[in-house]
Amino acid sequence: MYYSYDGLYRVLSLNAMTKTALTEKLGISSRTIAKLAKGEKVADHILRKIADYFSCSVEELCEVKSDNIILQTLRDEKKAKLSGGLYHELQVRMTYNSNHIEGSRLSEDQTRLIFETRTINAGDGVPIDDIIETVNHFRAIDYVIDVAEDKLTEDIIKELHRILKQSTADSALSWFAVGEYKKRGNVVGGRETAKPKDVPVRMETLLEAYNSKDTITVEDVIAFHRDFESIHPFQDGNGRVGRLIALKECLQHGIVPFIIEDSKKAFYYRGLAEWENEKGYLIDTCLDGQDTFKRLLAMFDIGV
Image (cartoon, rainbow, N blue to C red):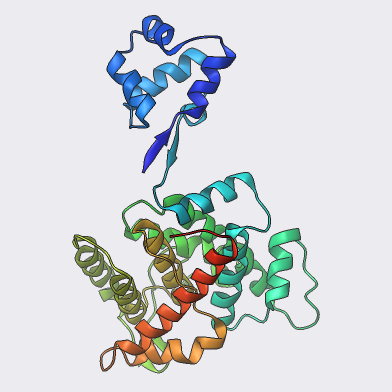
């Protein structure tokens, strides 16, 4: 990552002040000014001192930029509220496919309508929770983009679950534990998952092993995803949270993300179920999802 001080230069220009004059006025060293020119990190107290002098926020002076072109494109388009770009398509396509895998009745066109106009022509028989979880998933992707470069923690994972499940019918159940690990046992596809009492230790162990790696590859992200799903730490929403985690980790480590399409659901579930016997099933499905994302990049002429 690097730092953009365009806001500082803009403030200096508006106040007809040079960098040299600023150093003299505030007692800032020439070395600090050199860092600003190179886009290097400057001590927080220096930025606060400058911000206080110009009566503005630190965020108005300094913006963190990512070397990852995919992540920076998503952040720029999100901030600009740009319609029809990579951010727009990621929101619609990942939200539709991830929710549909879990049984949502909303079509891709309905999902797109909610994102673009905040309206819905749902027709008959569409549960309110499908609409709520679609809006929540948009917010969860925004959160992923915001924290993409942070180390993966239990707090981030729990926050994804809280965002996804807030205001749903499940959230009204006292035992459901939105944003917290499950309180009741559950199974997935008839297979036993971690018992509630074992979840905290297993999640801690999984994260410690994952975060201790010197480098993270797409295969590492896929393996983490499978292990997360086998623990199944939440009462519901594990698949969507797991795929959001995979998006975050790909963005953090400079890996082209993958979108699992609903049409590939059977292959995806087979890959999760058969991991111990044949890792290739899940890896191939996720790499196919990576090809889906690469087609999006090509659509917007974003080279990686």
